[in-house]
Length: 272
Image 1 (cartoon, rainbow, N blue to C red):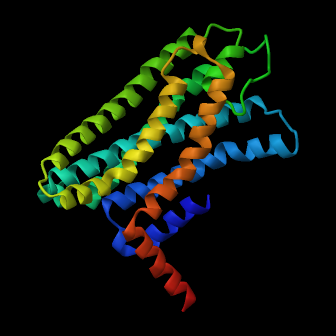
Image 2: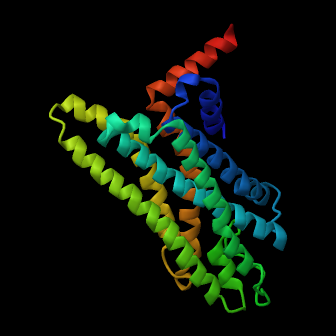
Image 3: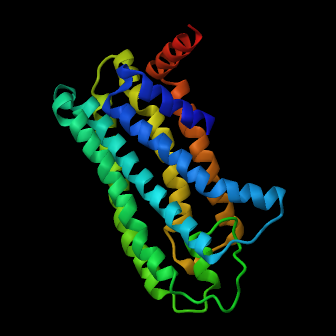
């Protein structure tokens, strides 16, 4: 929370960071703050107060926002990959292709996609019956454990999950993959070692974050609900919910000189 809040404040206050890459990073920090706030408070209540119950309405709300924030994040990561592709492969056209207007449009599109994506899932899940068991073998209301305890026909929900999830996740994944393949080819064409290192350093942080993100997402959701293994899913869910929001600010801020300069400016202003 502290790291993501720091990123949000520094980017908002430092005008030199009002560039496409940092606008995407600002949106990503908001998503990390919101997604963490959606699940971790309930986990802390379960751990410290031993209150392991949740109402059906709260469960459906938690599921909606979990899918909502995940959809925005996967779209933002693809937009950030495209930004790095333009910056490295077509630097002379960067100003025109990634203007603040275009960047803002991509960010707004990510939020709209996120708003629409969970609607069908949540609508179908809310109509399911849970007469067999009310015990969710998970630490939050995720789709797979909810389908596991339902005594209704879940084929429609699973089909919707495959169609919508695959369209969004695979399309953004391949866009990100193609962007980085082209980036790597462009970097390898640079003759000087220093030039290659400088070019790669501009996208290494983002590449690290998306690698962790996609590994956890694919291990969790790119499989049928029948292959749900509670302990394995809890482990990968914890990586996604806690580790990814924790690493994002560390990777993006500690390795970024522009951000560290912006942080120093804010500190200097506050101490005057």
